[in-house]
Image (tube, rainbow, N blue to C red; front, side, top):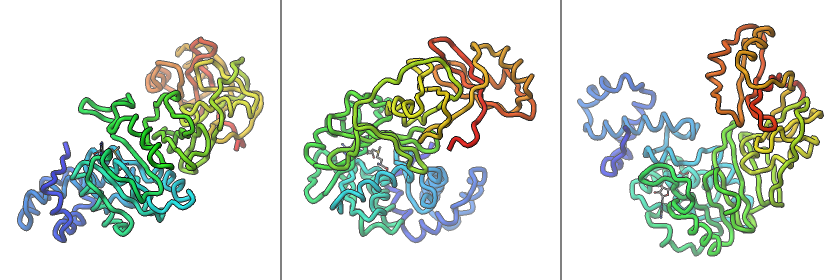
Length: 397
Ligand SMILES: C[S@@+](CC[C@H](N)C(=O)[O-])C[C@H]1O[C@@H](n2cnc3c(N)ncnc32)[C@H](O)[C@@H]1O
């Protein structure tokens, strides 16, 4: 269990601490014991322990902060809660495009994931967090990345911070309590009601919320944007003032493809299974924008509760993958095994929506062998558990 202590953290920022961190950059866990023994000849054991912990965190941080993690500082919680660079850059880009936005308050800044991206977009950031160690880490990150001129860090409760002089505000409340992750927006720290009053105090801003936020609590006039990165929905963010560009939107990274609607969301019609299966990105599903996409191909849902639609038309749609359906079969793994064997399918992809069966279980039971590829979709069609055997479509944009 990694633990970063506020008393030993400053030593990592000294010349000796930095040299030690450089030395350890690519160490592997298996070597830790012998390394620590060797280093004890020249360094304080507490510093060595702190450097080893920091190195492990940096190595873990590479996934979220590619290119930066090896120069950054983390706490375990700070790393876990930080906004990854790709998503933070997307958000910072919208702030940077806002007319006259030169200074942003980043409330609940954590170790600085969002603040760093804002500063890199050329915006001066006043970052606030109430945890002293987290603030020390955020300051260290600003210096390590050459952004100290653009970033100030204040250790305070955000409810007590004056926001005069800020052109816009960003808030990313903590979404975990002592008992773990919380899904109740009023249990965020600070609570959701603080976010909504913040919008009354500062004319423009953004608040990061959990992707599961109920649509009905999004205040009137705000845009709720769901963001996915490489297929996984990462977060939702509420925009207000002239930073809001729609009522709901979905953005898929890494390319930033976007789908949005100014109106309240609608339910797509349901119909029989047709030739092409369209699978919208999770951000589109969360944003309830399936009907907008289905309309573009005269598509219909296969079930009123499932976010797959089919159409006889083959069109490359934004934020959507498309498959050609070769078979529609009632759910039966024996039958699936027989069909796939007959077709020599060894390269099997299993997808599911609305099915409790685990893809791994299917692969284990079906034991695919052969030179061909197929994707099987476990789902429900008009309420009935169904297997759709599909193949990828060439030329669907
Ligand atoms: C989700 S993290 C922020 C992550 C950050 N956006 C990033 O990308 O690194 C939430 C932070 O809010 C801080 N926090 C929670 N309640 C607070 C409050 N009332 N005042 C100030 N900070 C608070 C926590 O200490 C935690 O660091």
